[in-house]
Structure formats: structure tokens, C-alpha cells
Image 1 (spheres, rainbow, N blue to C red):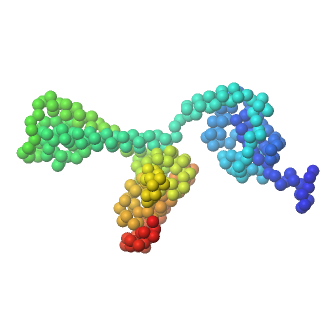
Image 2 (image 1 turned 60 degrees about the vertical axis):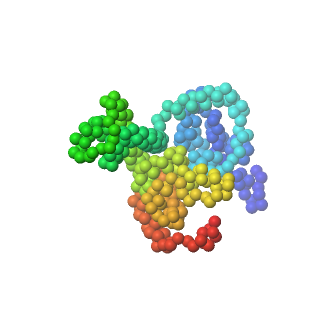
Length: 360
């Protein structure tokens, strides 16, 4: 066996690398396969193993081939060895009698397996918050139309009833006289009289709007409850609604946990960021996290620093939630509040114009 200058065998210089292909698991030394376990030549069996890999699970074959001081070609196997970049293109399916037709059948079976799997709860949360946004947009449009339409008959009602209460009052009573009698208001309205058929159509429209408000409230309760279960740390830090929006914009809790805090800070501000890159305009300081009271209630010159802090804490919270770690939401919120107070004490006045130009 070849020996180097320090009288150490060359086999000790190169660690074995564990590689998993669609047709088997291989233990390699540079460009040579030293050991292997091939999968069963059955499309369904192969698909089940590939599905387990996609879920981040470790295969029994990988555990059987594992060695000490070994490296791995997949970060999923980091418990077995150090992940490294490794070109495994020399391991070809044809050399082991695995055909392209078998691979195609296995991929079709894999698609069937993955589509039948239950949805992760964060996916449902993302859909729910998008549905709530759709309802907000729809109710705003319908509410504006109802005010304009019913205002022809009883414009003064808008001073006493707001949003869902306004729609509910019209849905229940319709007639101006009925609403006045029920609420005990004594008002001499300047509105015009409407025919009974006009009032009836208005009531139907108001019932639809009232039901949408009720659905929106149900969605809000659902999001609040699910967020406390799925992402308790993130919910404590930023609230259920904002936390759900961050998960939705990131594409899931897992991806949110993987994003750097600088990206979390700008989620929702993609258009402004592209405009900055394309035309050189000033970059955005925050995205959707502007909705957090600590950011939008702060003076304009503090918002960038507070957004950075909040994004950092949110990034930590999402990581702990995804990996189901211990609850640290209260501590994160406490640290955020302390940092906000520190920023307010350190920067009580806006920067002078010369300083702002220098920062640009």
C-alpha cells in the first residue's frame, strides 16, 4: 500500500463519503465505490424510500453503511458525518442494471405518495391568512357600496354603526323606521324614501356582507389558535396575524426558519427592493414587519434599527418553533422591548440632513 512522507497510509488521508442515489446507498473513496446497498427493483419500494428522504428521514441502508470519521454528501445525514460537496456522477444507474423506465415509474409513484400525505399545519395557516386578506378586500368593497346605497335612505346610520354592526342592522331591519325604533334613536333623517322591493334587495346584500364579516372573524380565531399550537414563540413575539403573514410570505415555517434575518426584515417589500436594484432608489428598511407596533409607532429614524432587531428575534423564534424547542417567546419579547428602549434613549432626535446624506 502506498505510503506518504510521514509514513501514513494514503487510505487514511481520504475519508469515506456516504452517497445516496435513487437506486441505492454507496460508500465511496474519491471516485471508487467501496461498498453499496442497492434498493429493491420495485417502483413502489423505491418511491417509499425517496419519500422518506424528502421528509428528512434517515434510511436503514444509510445507517448500516455508516462508518466512523465518515463524510456525507447530504446535509440530511449530518448526524452520521460532516456534509461535503461531492460529485457522484460516476455512480450510474445503468452500471447496476437500474433502467430509466424504472426511474420514471418510481418518480410517478413518489408523486402519488407525496400528494396523499397530510398537509403540514403551517401550510393551512398560510392559506387561511391569504383567505382572510381576500375577505378583507371583499368586505371593504361591499361595505363601501352598502354605505353609498343605503345612505340614500338613511345616511345618518353611518355615524352610529360601523363595519359589521352597520351591515347587521340593515340585514335585520332594513327600514329606517324599524332601525330607529329598535335602537331608540330620535333622528330626523334627510334620506329619501325607498320602495319595499328596494329595501328587500338591500337587506339581501347586507346579509351577504354580514356573513362575510362572520367568516372573517372565524378565520381570525382559527389563525390565532393554530399559530399558538404551531408557532408559539413567533406568535408571542409578533402576534398571530403578523406571524402567519411571515410564514405565508416565506413559503412555510421551515423556509422562514432557514432565511437570514436580513431577508425576514424585508419580506413583503420585494417590489421596493427590486425598484432599488433596478433604478438605484433608496432600499426599503422593512417589509410586512412594519405592522408590528414597535415599528410603526416608532419615529421614522428609528424604524430601520427596530426592524432589524425584530427580524433577528423573529428568525430565532421561527427556528425554535420549527424544531419544536423550548418556549422562549417571553424572553424574546422582553429582549425586544429592552432593545427598543435602548434605541429610543440612544437616538432621541432625528439625524441631521448632512448625516442622512452621508448614510445614503
